[in-house]
Image 1 (tube, rainbow, N blue to C red):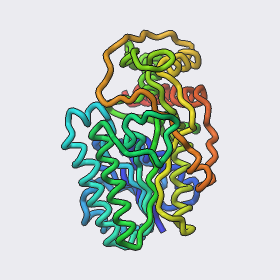
Image 2: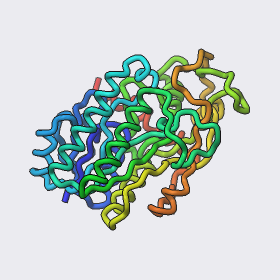
Image 3: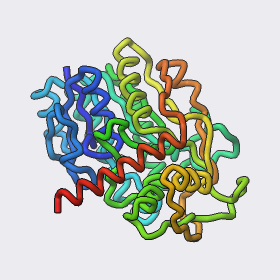
Image 4: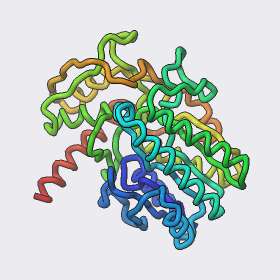
Length: 331
């Protein structure tokens, strides 16, 4: 009995694959390597290079590897790019997800964990945000994820199929053992960018907007350690295997930090006072996103172990240093 992890050569997918392997599960990773890296696939996982939208390929993988569950991470994730290239996002995130779901249903897969986003909420006028809030995404990225959630809900009604959609808030950090981390070719996540600046990979960074209605004028986000998030996926699968009903659950810690607070933490932990510019707001950036995370704790028994901003930053910085060493050795 094997778990198929789509996008398992990417940031969150590789950490989920590690968590599954650490728990004694068999794993097969499907990734087209447009964003992920072959070396990021954990040792012990089988690997297939290909597209999750290729129904015939997915059916073969399910059959050949005795797949009983799917964790779906593959897709495009950069919010501003989705505003510029909306049709690409609907193809990569929605059309391909529909094809993957079709192959899963056709092959008798009963358990499906979906990598969703807090972007489905848009800009709620209250915080913390709970799962019952209206879905009003303000970017094609958020809409593409919302559409997949709706497909999952309809498929669960029509077929012998259940799912959990995990709505991520801001994911950061790296595997504490140094086995995986964020290696995006076009990084947009704040802690990643600040860590790159602190370690000299970038000459400077920017704050996008300082006129939000927040205490220091910058956006507020709920940052969750990627290893805590990976563990949530494993718990979600176990929940479904026990007969749990299909559900959506927020993934966050329930408290937020501003952009300036995060940059201050990176400067403190790294000991580097790096340059920070000011820039205009980016399209599709909500003012404040903080999770109401009671449901995931109550239903899955999820207890985060890395709920500390400086710990998250320390692991992110350690990963950046390891990447620099990797580049030196490769040269």
